[in-house]
Length: 263
Image 1 (cartoon, rainbow, N blue to C red):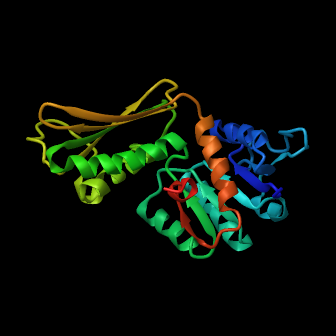
Image 2 (cartoon, rainbow, N blue to C red):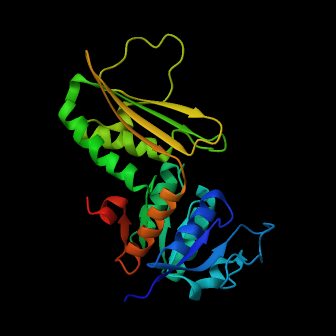
């Protein structure tokens, strides 16, 4: 039987951090080796499991406690942790969203030296939808307009969501379009008729919505919709833990859930 992969969780007391703790506890493929919060957090020093692991603030001092870091925090915090993992040759699973182009370039550069798995969504169902979206866009072609609608809880700070962007990219690939050129993120006032090749995004924020995403293919006389609705963060956490177990020991590179799931 293989030895469980030791993981560390950054942002351990947040919504995703707590879900990741639960997913790790239920998994035979990983074991929790360390947990962290930002400097000055009230939970620093608090024991979080029966093994006596305490929440720390110094990732650099815990190199001997983990093999893979899982980070679902904020771009600045993730990049700071990434620098430490680079120095210590640790693998990183990144679930943080909202990176700028310059920040993504830093992650790309880091992936030349360590294994990094980055995804806007770790749900198995969402990643299946991405494959379906690419196939649907390829089949439906230029005769269908593409719109992405997403909804999240009131606390989410970036828009559109990372998952919505992934879905838009999947549809763009299938349709032979360039999302960078064809995406429309705002509509207001007299916009004129819709350009055929555009891919529109609509964002809803409110309440405690975990994450709803729908991609609509709108044609003349018919409409095809592919929808994913998350009712719990555990599906994201279970996918991230599965990704961490898969990533351990891999060669340097930037990986995605497509490789984990064998797509």
